[in-house]
Length: 178
Length: 178
Image 1 (cartoon, rainbow over the protein chains, first blue to last red):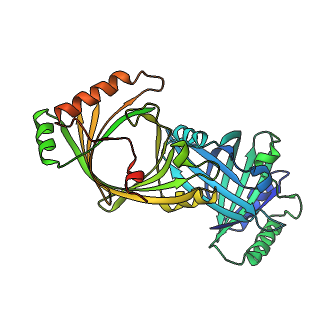
Image 2 (image 1 turned 60 degrees about the horizontal axis):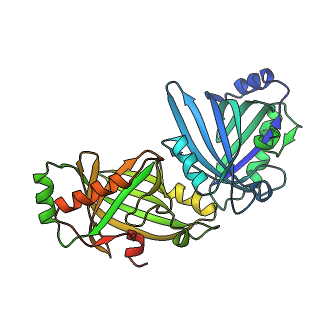
Image 3 (image 1 turned 30 degrees about the horizontal axis):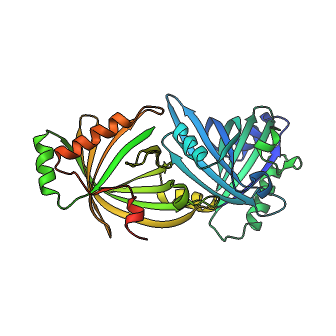
């Protein structure tokens, strides 16, 4: 799967929420995401531009846990990249497996995310600890798809939300400056 | 967790099932296990004696999937080693993640396993494709435990089952000769 994604620094969320409502975007949910990133023993993900993380989402008395791998970004203006994500039953055991294989924990990024859907786009309003507030717009495509058109649609959608600058290719991991 | 485990080649299962019944061992279940093994990009698991696998257990219309990591064997007479296992939601996505990280699929071992419990021991009767039939006895201990005593208990239990030879330290992956 290819994740076509553009991130922008936000000044505030109120006007964006208002525009989302005017566009009839559907508010899906809000959630806290705690992402623990790992580096590989055989290549430096800071150089190869890959990411491996364990995401924890506390939900009432439950904890949802996912492994996510992201490949290097494949274009110059966005965060478009290959992504695989799978649910796992336990974060600690998964971490034990990664560490036994030689992967090293790098840092944990914590954010509160408001998630909206508009047609096939997912729009998130992210409040990221130690980094600030951001908007991300994402659409998932099949492998091998042409993502240029999708990218243009995403930038048009940003315009409709009143955002025409502040686009940011760096990850939250990079932006938290750890 | 430390997995204290001894494997033995079996000639037949009938007499062993009879002894298990006499010992009041509890038959827990039978299941098919399809284990796909991977090798690492940065060290050769055939040399380091580690294992990383995705286990699939078909169960009615469901498929249970696990990631398992096994460390190097830590004694000379058994298969005792560190083990971490975690349930995952999807085998194919997990394989995509492993392969993206540079792990290579080595082989798949398929077996039918009858699982019994006797006190804290798990006894399995395994019919392994391309390898033969085997008995495994296992007990899980906390990290740092002394496993010598457990090992002696396991060999005593083998004696009660009528098995005093044919002990085998090689994995099913090695025994299938792939």
